[in-house]
Image 1 (cartoon, rainbow, N blue to C red):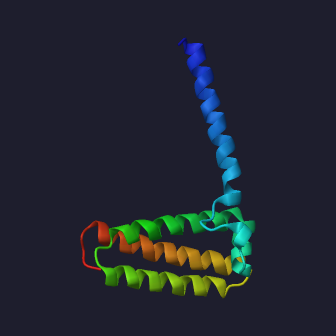
Image 2 (image 1 turned 135 degrees about the vertical axis):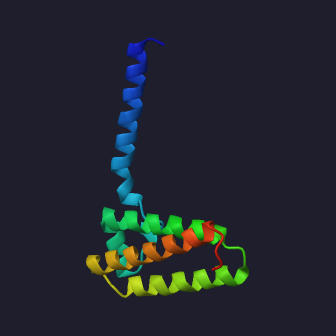
Image 3 (image 1 turned 90 degrees about the horizontal axis):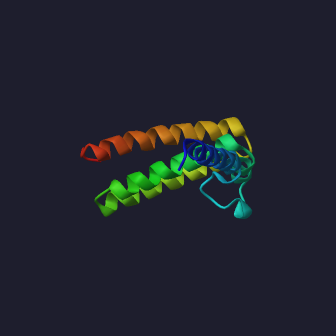
Length: 122
């Protein structure tokens, strides 16, 4: 492959990645927007920033869930997540409220994941 061909191939990959990233926010949230029933869910689907926060929170939740060793820990995390979802949904369509709920949840999950990864008791 010549340097010019390599450069063109690399440019094509970069362009495809950029286009893919630009299209991603519409479906960045971790749930199906076609089934969004709560006003908060519809607000998340309409807002790329909230969709990204939802996806980030969902990844942290899944990583933490996979790290927990005991059923009682996993049950506790599920209960905690359900309380978060209830709190988030109580925001209605208030974007600022939803954003705050996600940022708080992300902080808590990231902190708990650090503890789990370091082998500290939950």
